[in-house]
Length: 288
Image (cartoon, rainbow, N blue to C red; front, top):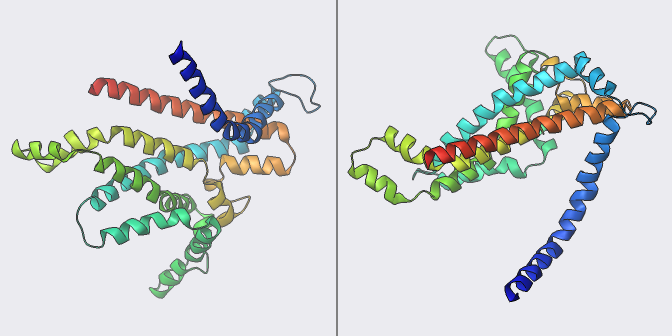
C-alpha cells in the first residue's frame, strides 16, 4: 500500500513537470493537426464530410511532382548523409592532427542562421556567383545551376552540409561507448581492420545508426527553408517539394488541399518511422 502511494505521488509529480510541455505541444501541434485532419474531410463549404479533397489532391499534377521530388530527395540525400557522417566520425575518432578543430568546424552549421547559410550558397551557385566565375576563368561557359537538373544536387549538398555535424556528434558518442576490450580481444585473435569494422564497430553502432537515419529522414522533410530562400516559391521543377506545394496552396487559401497534403505527409512520415523501428527491433532480436 505504501509503495502504491509512493508510485502515485511520483506519477503526479512527473505529470506536473510535464504539464507545461504537454500543454504547449497540444495547443501548437496536436490540436491544430487534429483540426487539419477534420478539415481535410470537409467540403469547401465546411459542412459535409467527403473524400473528394484527397481525390483531387492525388490527381493533381503539381502534387504528384512535389511528392515525387520529395521522395527522391529523401532516398538520395539520406544515404549520402549517413555514410559521409559515419566516415567522418570514424576519422575524428582516431588520434589525428587538428581533430578538435575539425569537430568544431562540423558543428558550426548547426548554429549558423539559415538565412546566412543560404546567402553563402547563393554566392556560390548564382549565375554571377563564385563557381561560374571560376568556370569562366578557365575558359568554360557559365551554367545556370539553380534552373537546371543540377539544382537537385545543389539542394542535396546544402542539406548534407547543414545536417552532417549533428550526425557526426551522434556517431562519435556511439563510437566512444564501444568498450576498448573488444578491439583488444580482436587484436589478440588476429582480426583485421575490416573484420573489426563490420564485426565490432558497425554491430555496436546499430542503435546509433537507426537514430541517425531516423533524424536524417525527418530533417529531409524540413529542407523547404533552404530551398525557398535559394530558389523562391516556384523553383525549378526538380526541387519543387511538398512543402512548396503546401505553402502555395496556403497562399491561395485552399485550406482543404493544404490540410489533405499535410495529413498525407504525416502518414508517410509515420509509416517510415514505423518501418525503421520495426527493422531495428528485428535486427536487434537477430543479433541477440
